[in-house]
Amino acid sequence: MKIQSPNHQITKSPNSSPTGIVLHSGGLDSTIACKVLQAQGIHIIALYFITPFFGYKVEGQKKILSNRAMVDQGIESKGIDISEVYLKMIKNPEHGYGKHMNPCIDCRILMIRNAINRLDEFNASFVATGEVLGQRPMSQRRDALRIIERESGADGQLLRPLSALHLPPTDVENKGVVDRSRLLGLTGRGRKDQIILAEKYGIKDYPAPAGGCVLADPILSLRFKCMFRLRPELDVNDCVLLRMGRHFVLPDGSWLVIGRDKRENAKLVSMMMEGDIKLDLTAGYGPTGLWRKTCSDVYADLAAGILCRYARIRRRLEEVRLSGPGTENVKTITTFQASDEIVNKYKV
Ligand code: SF4
Image 1 (cartoon, rainbow, N blue to C red):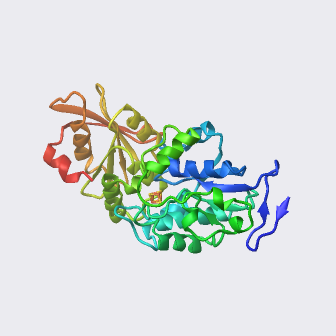
Image 2 (spheres, rainbow, N blue to C red):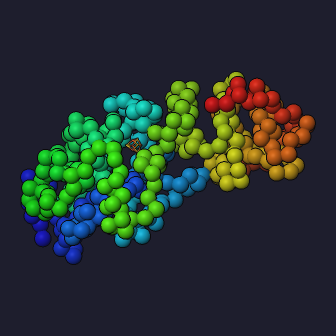
């Protein structure tokens, strides 16, 4: 059954409930948005977006879509990889950055535009988000919500179920497909109402607000800023790499990443690309290093010395093996561990 709307056909799922797409970040607010709409009998498809900065667990270049939480909630979910377009946007966001390196307004516009363009694909009538009026200083002010709606091409089709009662009615509310009286009127930064709603809907194990976005992390965003300044051509693999390990930029501009534990060491190995050099100790347990964008091994001693600084058992002299991915080309050098002064000088 189809009901016509001025902007988009209002469609119903095969079991004759209307369908809506909810942008799902994995957080509490977007899960509540799904639940509030489901409670009206609306079929929900939760879209989550994958970028180098959020949306998938870092495991080399293999993307592991994490939708277990959604399955637990009985919500159909789908991951969409927007890594390339996101990377382009983050280098120069039209609406600027928030407190850290979070381009929240452009980020929302990008994701909502993508979802709007998929309405037909999912046979859906509208897009909804878990945004709460006044909750975030950059992207959830009233004027910012309006800018996001307009610039994503979602005029009249973007529902914010948690704050709907403080916002103009959308097309689907006007048509009665979504019952406005059963939507919410939350505002502000407080979480009390959301926690009560989480209990009501049986939502457990939700993350802290904005806890999933590394772009809003004060320490990681400093690293991102510094590396984007040094290397504006950073690609998706580089950005994923930035999220793990200890980072150093050597005098020739080459980039050394050292794993902090066994898991990170394995991930670094899985992320190696042509031209990268792997460093590890020939004896005993120790960290793995990934040395990237180096044109020569002039600074091999320095890279090896920094790696030795993080060996579990520190010896005066260490033997470090340098090898490339998929090659037999192995070189071994003997070196001293770098001093704290050297480590701090090149650390990013
Ligand atoms: S906090 Fe991160 S994911 Fe959320 S809108 Fe901002 S940049 Fe996007």
